[in-house]
Amino acid sequence: MSWRGSRISVVLPTYNERDSIRAAILDFAGTDVVDEILVINNNAAVGTSQEIAAAIAQVRSDTTVREIHETCQGYGFAIRRGLREAAGDYIVVSEPDGTFLGRDTFKLLAYVDDFDVVYGSRTARTFIWRGANMGMWLRWGNWCVAKLMEFLFNSTNLTDVGCTMRLIRRDALSRLEPQFTVGGSAFGPEMMLLSLLAGLRVIQVPVNYLPRIGVSSVTGDAGKAVRLGLSMIGLVVGYRIRAWRGQVQPAGMPRGVELTRR
Ligand SMILES: Nc1nc2c(ncn2[C@@H]2O[C@H](COP(=O)(O)OP(=O)(O)OP(=O)(O)O)[C@@H](O)[C@H]2O)c(=O)[nH]1
Ligand SMILES: [Mg+2]
Image (cartoon, rainbow, N blue to C red):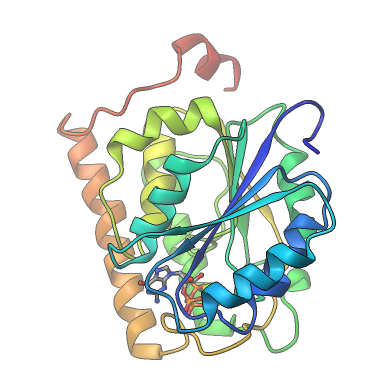
């Protein structure tokens, strides 16, 4: 296992993915480059642990699969726990609801020689599968907030703030971890903001986006999606203002590394 001598961890949070978690685990294990898959059970639906156990019995590669229980409720708490427990040199975060493909790990890995964090994006039309929850409003909403972030932080091209599939190098993660504050659904954009503020080498690349298996508890509901979008805008603007005032001082990468990328 491993990829070019580097160990790869995959973090999958689970809350309401009983019907898709087994296939998701097997999909990532089937890439043959993943050393460990950490499934973070965030008070998940009854029967989820049995599905994880069934997946473990079916894995054909030497990928280890571990279920970890995180009782603090929320997407951010689940991911932060997974990031703390992961042992890999590269850590991939995804979702086990059928919306992402294990093989897109290779799209993220393609950039690790040049970047510290590789974010996925779900707004490239040609990568949105028929039936995926990425209609016009969600697509342009994610794009607009991403452009706001890009403008306010003078970053590389950003096209999505809601994509949960991403990859981070271990050393870059160690710099960000002490700064994480969000325990809910807006953790994803907070990690993006902190990585930009830290001067990490960041890139965002399109990944496949498929229809969800089972019921969505966040962006399937228009009211919840709008509220989440507004909270993301608040986060982006809030971080910008606090950074201007010198109130956020994330540990940056060595200056030289940053300058050679510009
Ligand atoms: N809703 C919810 N999701 C959680 C929680 N803890 C972890 N998660 C994970 O967060 C992810 C997002 O939840 P989904 O229901 O898939 O949300 P969605 O509507 O598909 O929205 P996105 O995937 O963010 O576009 C899933 O992978 C869950 O496993 C939690 O407490 N509540
Ligand atoms: Mg989802």
